[in-house]
Length: 210
Image 1 (tube, rainbow, N blue to C red):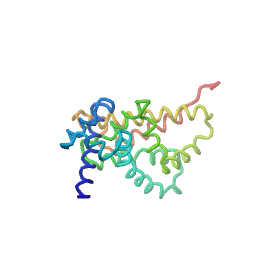
Image 2: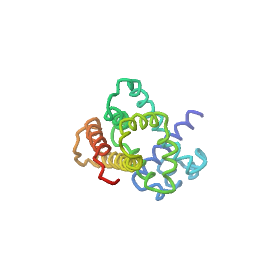
Image 3: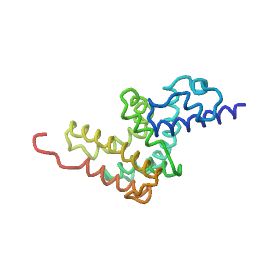
Protein backbone atom coordinates (compact mmCIF):
# COMPACT_ATOMS: atom_id res chain seq x y z
CA UNK A 1 0.00 0.00 0.00
CA UNK A 2 2.75 2.58 0.76
CA UNK A 3 4.23 1.91 -2.70
CA UNK A 4 0.82 2.50 -4.29
CA UNK A 5 0.51 5.78 -2.41
CA UNK A 6 3.95 6.90 -3.60
CA UNK A 7 3.11 6.01 -7.19
CA UNK A 8 -0.14 7.97 -6.95
CA UNK A 9 1.66 11.02 -5.58
CA UNK A 10 4.20 10.86 -8.41
CA UNK A 11 1.42 10.55 -10.99
CA UNK A 12 -0.36 13.57 -9.54
CA UNK A 13 2.87 15.59 -9.45
CA UNK A 14 3.72 14.78 -13.07
CA UNK A 15 0.17 15.51 -14.22
CA UNK A 16 -0.08 18.79 -12.33
CA UNK A 17 3.27 19.97 -13.66
CA UNK A 18 2.22 19.25 -17.25
CA UNK A 19 -1.17 20.92 -16.92
CA UNK A 20 0.27 23.94 -15.12
CA UNK A 21 2.95 24.32 -17.82
CA UNK A 22 0.43 24.07 -20.64
CA UNK A 23 -2.48 26.10 -19.27
CA UNK A 24 -1.20 28.16 -16.35
CA UNK A 25 -1.30 27.43 -12.65
CA UNK A 26 -4.40 29.49 -11.95
CA UNK A 27 -6.34 27.99 -14.87
CA UNK A 28 -6.16 24.37 -13.68
CA UNK A 29 -8.28 23.09 -10.81
CA UNK A 30 -7.42 20.32 -8.36
CA UNK A 31 -10.37 18.39 -9.77
CA UNK A 32 -8.92 18.56 -13.29
CA UNK A 33 -5.56 17.35 -12.02
CA UNK A 34 -7.14 14.42 -10.19
CA UNK A 35 -9.14 13.39 -13.25
CA UNK A 36 -6.19 13.71 -15.66
CA UNK A 37 -4.07 11.65 -13.26
CA UNK A 38 -6.64 8.85 -13.46
CA UNK A 39 -7.89 9.25 -9.91
CA UNK A 40 -11.50 8.29 -9.23
CA UNK A 41 -11.49 10.53 -6.18
CA UNK A 42 -11.74 14.16 -7.31
CA UNK A 43 -10.24 15.22 -3.98
CA UNK A 44 -7.06 13.19 -4.55
CA UNK A 45 -4.86 16.29 -4.73
CA UNK A 46 -6.09 17.52 -1.35
CA UNK A 47 -5.80 14.04 0.12
CA UNK A 48 -2.17 13.54 -0.92
CA UNK A 49 -0.85 17.11 -0.62
CA UNK A 50 -3.23 19.00 1.63
CA UNK A 51 -3.07 22.35 -0.16
CA UNK A 52 -2.37 23.90 -3.53
CA UNK A 53 0.77 25.53 -2.16
CA UNK A 54 2.08 22.19 -0.90
CA UNK A 55 1.47 20.64 -4.33
CA UNK A 56 3.42 23.40 -6.07
CA UNK A 57 6.24 23.16 -3.53
CA UNK A 58 6.44 19.40 -4.09
CA UNK A 59 6.72 19.87 -7.86
CA UNK A 60 9.54 22.38 -7.45
CA UNK A 61 11.43 20.21 -4.95
CA UNK A 62 11.03 17.17 -7.21
CA UNK A 63 13.39 18.87 -9.64
CA UNK A 64 15.50 21.34 -7.69
CA UNK A 65 16.95 18.69 -5.39
CA UNK A 66 18.45 16.94 -8.40
CA UNK A 67 19.65 20.19 -9.98
CA UNK A 68 21.29 21.00 -6.66
CA UNK A 69 23.25 17.74 -6.83
CA UNK A 70 24.48 18.53 -10.35
CA UNK A 71 25.65 21.96 -9.21
CA UNK A 72 27.43 20.42 -6.23
CA UNK A 73 29.33 18.14 -8.61
CA UNK A 74 30.33 21.15 -10.70
CA UNK A 75 31.35 23.15 -7.61
CA UNK A 76 33.79 20.39 -6.67
CA UNK A 77 36.06 22.01 -9.27
CA UNK A 78 35.49 25.56 -8.01
CA UNK A 79 39.13 25.97 -7.00
CA UNK A 80 40.00 25.85 -10.69
CA UNK A 81 37.50 28.58 -11.67
CA UNK A 82 39.44 31.58 -12.97
CA UNK A 83 36.82 33.66 -14.76
CA UNK A 84 33.28 34.97 -14.59
CA UNK A 85 32.42 32.55 -17.37
CA UNK A 86 33.34 29.57 -15.17
CA UNK A 87 30.81 30.70 -12.57
CA UNK A 88 28.11 31.44 -15.13
CA UNK A 89 28.70 28.00 -16.62
CA UNK A 90 28.17 26.54 -13.15
CA UNK A 91 24.85 28.39 -12.93
CA UNK A 92 23.49 27.52 -16.37
CA UNK A 93 24.81 24.16 -17.56
CA UNK A 94 23.65 21.90 -14.68
CA UNK A 95 20.06 23.10 -15.12
CA UNK A 96 20.05 22.45 -18.86
CA UNK A 97 21.86 19.14 -18.42
CA UNK A 98 19.11 18.11 -16.02
CA UNK A 99 16.36 19.01 -18.49
CA UNK A 100 18.24 17.09 -21.17
CA UNK A 101 18.39 14.02 -18.92
CA UNK A 102 14.57 13.97 -18.66
CA UNK A 103 14.04 13.30 -22.35
CA UNK A 104 11.33 15.06 -24.34
CA UNK A 105 8.90 16.56 -23.69
CA UNK A 106 9.75 18.22 -20.42
CA UNK A 107 7.56 20.66 -18.53
CA UNK A 108 9.56 22.09 -15.64
CA UNK A 109 10.98 25.15 -17.42
CA UNK A 110 7.52 26.27 -18.56
CA UNK A 111 6.05 25.50 -15.15
CA UNK A 112 8.80 27.60 -13.53
CA UNK A 113 8.10 30.48 -15.91
CA UNK A 114 4.43 30.32 -14.94
CA UNK A 115 5.36 30.66 -11.26
CA UNK A 116 7.84 33.48 -11.79
CA UNK A 117 5.36 35.63 -13.73
CA UNK A 118 2.61 35.37 -11.12
CA UNK A 119 2.96 37.72 -8.12
CA UNK A 120 1.16 35.30 -5.81
CA UNK A 121 3.26 32.28 -6.79
CA UNK A 122 6.78 33.59 -7.42
CA UNK A 123 7.64 33.55 -3.71
CA UNK A 124 7.22 29.76 -3.74
CA UNK A 125 9.80 29.44 -6.52
CA UNK A 126 12.16 31.89 -4.86
CA UNK A 127 11.95 30.12 -1.50
CA UNK A 128 12.32 26.62 -2.93
CA UNK A 129 14.98 27.11 -5.59
CA UNK A 130 16.50 30.59 -5.76
CA UNK A 131 17.88 30.44 -2.22
CA UNK A 132 19.63 27.09 -2.64
CA UNK A 133 23.07 26.79 -0.98
CA UNK A 134 24.82 26.12 -4.29
CA UNK A 135 23.18 29.11 -5.95
CA UNK A 136 24.36 31.42 -3.19
CA UNK A 137 27.94 30.13 -3.61
CA UNK A 138 27.73 30.62 -7.38
CA UNK A 139 26.38 34.16 -7.09
CA UNK A 140 29.14 35.03 -4.63
CA UNK A 141 31.74 33.70 -7.07
CA UNK A 142 30.26 35.71 -9.92
CA UNK A 143 30.09 38.90 -7.86
CA UNK A 144 33.82 38.66 -7.11
CA UNK A 145 34.41 39.09 -10.83
CA UNK A 146 31.99 42.02 -11.04
CA UNK A 147 33.34 44.07 -8.14
CA UNK A 148 34.06 47.04 -10.43
CA UNK A 149 30.37 47.42 -11.26
CA UNK A 150 28.31 49.77 -9.05
CA UNK A 151 26.06 47.73 -6.76
CA UNK A 152 22.89 49.19 -8.29
CA UNK A 153 24.04 48.18 -11.77
CA UNK A 154 24.94 44.70 -10.58
CA UNK A 155 21.53 44.22 -9.00
CA UNK A 156 19.80 45.55 -12.12
CA UNK A 157 21.70 43.16 -14.36
CA UNK A 158 21.03 40.17 -12.13
CA UNK A 159 17.36 40.95 -12.52
CA UNK A 160 17.82 40.96 -16.29
CA UNK A 161 19.77 37.70 -16.18
CA UNK A 162 17.09 36.04 -14.13
CA UNK A 163 14.39 37.02 -16.62
CA UNK A 164 16.56 35.89 -19.52
CA UNK A 165 17.25 32.48 -18.02
CA UNK A 166 13.65 31.75 -17.03
CA UNK A 167 12.17 32.60 -20.40
CA UNK A 168 14.91 31.23 -22.66
CA UNK A 169 14.72 27.87 -20.87
CA UNK A 170 10.93 27.84 -21.12
CA UNK A 171 10.88 28.84 -24.79
CA UNK A 172 13.35 26.13 -25.80
CA UNK A 173 11.37 23.54 -23.86
CA UNK A 174 8.15 24.66 -25.58
CA UNK A 175 9.76 24.54 -29.03
CA UNK A 176 11.10 21.02 -28.48
CA UNK A 177 7.72 19.80 -27.22
CA UNK A 178 5.99 21.22 -30.30
CA UNK A 179 8.65 20.06 -32.77
CA UNK A 180 9.59 23.63 -33.70
CA UNK A 181 13.17 24.14 -35.00
CA UNK A 182 15.55 25.68 -32.44
CA UNK A 183 18.74 27.71 -33.06
CA UNK A 184 20.84 25.20 -31.11
CA UNK A 185 20.63 21.47 -31.80
CA UNK A 186 21.25 20.24 -28.26
CA UNK A 187 20.73 21.36 -24.67
CA UNK A 188 24.51 21.50 -24.23
CA UNK A 189 24.89 23.81 -27.24
CA UNK A 190 21.99 25.88 -25.93
CA UNK A 191 23.80 26.18 -22.61
CA UNK A 192 26.90 27.50 -24.36
CA UNK A 193 24.90 30.14 -26.21
CA UNK A 194 23.10 31.18 -23.06
CA UNK A 195 26.37 31.40 -21.11
CA UNK A 196 27.80 33.65 -23.85
CA UNK A 197 24.77 35.93 -23.59
CA UNK A 198 24.80 36.13 -19.78
CA UNK A 199 28.53 36.92 -19.62
CA UNK A 200 28.05 39.60 -22.28
CA UNK A 201 25.15 41.15 -20.37
CA UNK A 202 26.98 41.17 -17.05
CA UNK A 203 30.15 42.68 -18.49
CA UNK A 204 28.54 45.25 -20.80
CA UNK A 205 29.86 48.82 -20.52
CA UNK A 206 28.17 51.13 -18.02
CA UNK A 207 27.07 54.53 -19.28
CA UNK A 208 28.70 57.56 -17.65
CA UNK A 209 26.86 58.97 -14.67
CA UNK A 210 25.18 55.68 -13.69
